[in-house]
Image (cartoon, rainbow, N blue to C red; front, side):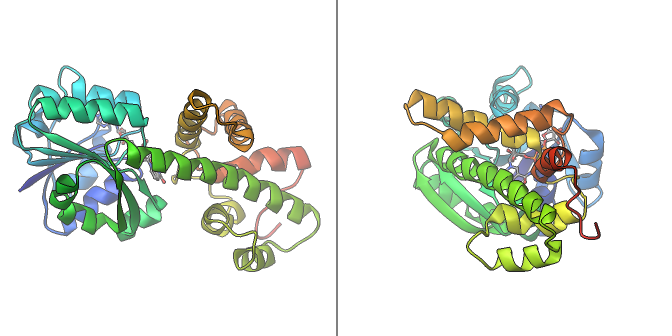
Length: 297
Ligand code: NAD
């Protein structure tokens, strides 16, 4: 079986690496040449366009930034749909709008191919260790066919429902992640101003009722270390909150906290932090409170 992987960013490159190391024959593509050469160095083969991959692969994975890019990669002039062969299975690990997933899955079906939305949670660490949570929308028989790939990447693989439901679940999860990240930054800043030792906050809150994934994953490794490099980008979190907020408006569901969190990430973007990890929202609080929440400050 030949497998394709399109989108080799913070998540995709780690997921694709795992597949190569597990023995999958992998064809890869990304706009960034360095991302591609990292994969070819360990045994993957490069292709220039999504169409070239579709012409050869039996199964194609995607890890792309948003709905617009995913749509372009599938439906654009050199896109997957221009060359996809009947029977091909498409697995989309990106976080995109549920209605976009539904539309693309229908389009795949008209070409005799099938598609699963399979957004992931667990961050770069989960991607590296093959311990992602994978939320799947689509047909049960396609999920079964995807088994060997998904098992290599995830520790928890859940069939949520029909096309788009994996994405709906992911949006709800990431609404909570965004809110929790802002909450953790807010609380850590106050704690620091109160003179609490960062290590003590990490140990005690990490084991107490204030704990969350955002707190546990980001306090020590990112905030206390002053390291806001690759992780889960502010731009991507903003996109997920935008999708949640839009869906909530359509359904007349108030999102008091979600809208607030999105505005805070908007300020971070305006300050040029769009490519930084979401934990960099702490900088907004630090600036306002005139403090630095670092291990040795
Ligand atoms: P990223 O921006 O680091 O990577 C996206 C990759 O897609 C980049 O390498 C980019 O060059 C490539 N790309 C863009 N347009 C392309 C095109 N036309 N053809 C081929 N490649 C193209 O993003 P990421 O952090 O790896 O996230 C990928 C997806 O997974 C997003 O939808 C994100 O919301 C989701 N996600 C990310 C995390 C995380 O912790 N980073 C966690 C869970 C889910």
